[in-house]
Amino acid sequence: MRETVAAVVGGRIGYEDGLDLLTVSPAGEVDPVLTGMLFDAVGRLLRAGWQPAELHRVTARRGNPACGHLIVDAVAAYQKDFKPRTIDPRWRAQAEDLGAKVWWGSDDGYVTEVVQHRRADRVTLIDAVLQALKVLATLPPIEILIPPPGQVARPARSPGSEALLSRVRALLAKAESTTFPAEAEAYSAKAQELISRHSLDEALLEASGDAQVVPYARRIGIDHPYESEKASLLDAVAGANRCHVVWSPEFGFATVFGFDADLDAVDLLHASLLVQAHRAMSRAEPPGGKAGRARLKTFRQSFLIGYAVRIGERLADADRAALEESRDAAALLPVLRSRDVQVQQARDKAFPRTVRGRGFRVDSEEGWESGRIAADAATLR
Image 1: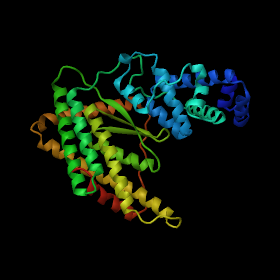
Image 2: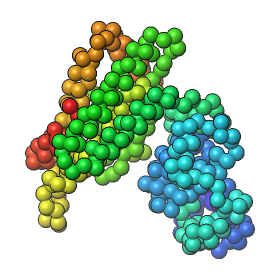
Image 3: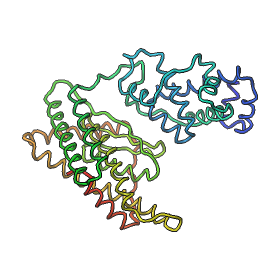
Image 4: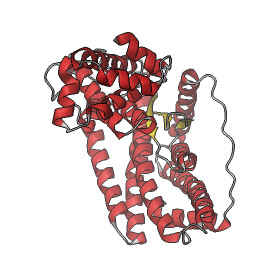
């Protein structure tokens, strides 16, 4: 039976014929094979650098929403064999956010229990498992950014860093929720002030310490539509916060390289600014409808590009101002230069054959100007 499933996934047996064959075969023969192959495929990729949230996201994008539920269960099945102290806190947090927990009995009866528990149609479920297996078979190993369960877990953040991030998240949440642009800008400006001071302080502290601090990387998912334009916003935010970005459109995520405090800033600011960009774009865009569909698409693309460019300019100005206001500016400059070299080296080591992406074409002056105006109103000083 395993050979049959592998032949369907590999395309050696027609998909519809294979689905029919598996559906009419005894459940006692089919279910354990499907479950075992699914859990094995997910475990292999989790050991090969994929994180729970990333694997769930790419499978749901390429398959269907039902595939996402299967990945969540496979993640739960994988981590149940490891002691909590051997699981990196960041890895465990992703699994918890997905709701990954073992709710079924034996793995052999997993498919039957899904049908009963989720009231799923058996044919639809088998179809979803096959689709998930087809997607998983196409995914290559990627850079290990968070050690998988069983490897040495990275120490948790200091209480001071966690407290700062909580304050920044609260300020950005207020900026996103208010309907008054001036108030949103005030909250965002305060968040940027906290982030900049913390980042520069950490740079000096780490430079004066004995322990070697190395740059890390974080993958940030980017949803469609307009993925490339949204990636340009992430690149603008990252550049202003001394980080470097590699965009992987085939997987729908970007890898951001930098030091911890700067990565936190990029992650939080990008998410908040994207929310504000969507809100401003919906207010400024021209009427849609069939006649204006092409115009609307062009407007949105140009809006997001203009927004990203202006965001980059303003954040770069804010970063320079924070550096100039620092009492240790002279000591910071060589430290920041050294850190930038380290970040670039980390990027080049992970992606030795990275090519520079092409520039963007702006076809809607109205969208471009609207995006820049929105960036002035909603972003940081």
